[in-house]
Image 1 (tube, rainbow, N blue to C red):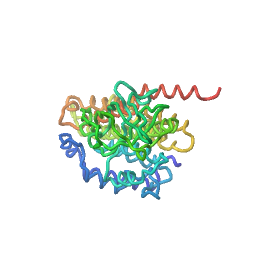
Image 2: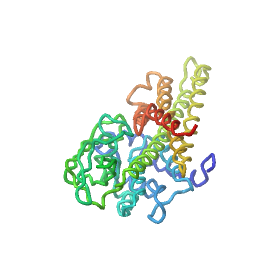
Image 3: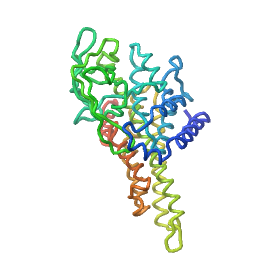
Image 4: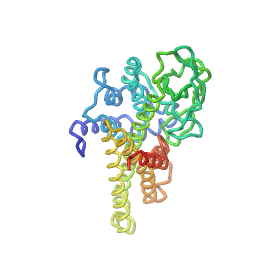
Length: 377
């Protein structure tokens, strides 16, 4: 692929930016902070019509990308979500679609509902006290005829209380399995939990002997289930890195404007050499953030090792530096930057939560180390 977005991708990005600016400006984001869902379902359906759920879905199922690199399309979209501190389950929905599309079962109806924005699907992967890639799951799937009985606890489930469907990673008798479970199924209890981001929602989900029919088994083979979970993690981590890069970029742009508007001793802040140097350092780091996240999105293809490496580099680097960038922006603003009324804390919240989601920098560095050990000497 090219090193820069194509004309179609630029149009996709511009359309999304304009739509987000018109429908969820910062004042609206602040109001949504007090709503239970954090976003409006009708608004999400309109976004689905703009293609937010379509890039990974093949045309035969009603989807379609704007370029030959669907993940790059989604990364541009995630970057715009970061710039706007936009609400909505963009990462969770596309990670879940990745799982459904990788199944050999018939999930066309569920994919169609999620694609249209009529249903929200999310990924129930994390468990209490574990990272993004546990050796085994404490959530257990016990065979029950051709289906399973599901019991266990999942936490950090993005938009769990707003979702209609969950892809659940569980431990079967021979290894991991993946199951599709409706949030209103008997035995499923969803409890919303607080998150640092004002519009990002999460939940803890308890499964108490939930019956899962055979046609809701997404992955039965342990190796296929593990590969599917890895694919979903790579998608979610890539989009998270792109979103953090977008949020940090917007915070920096606002800070540069502030440096030109704010005067001290008859001079704008932007005229002081020390602040120029700080701004130059931020700009350089931001370019590296955007370059690594773009490279990760562009790496998706047949070589899963190369993709895992690129995603690990992006998530570890952007996760470690985006927060530092926004913190620096806060410092340049002085006392104003730490007030609730100023918007900078919205971006700081977004990148801080993004740092922890789908693998911290330390966790992704460990994954990179493990990858090195698989390379022949």
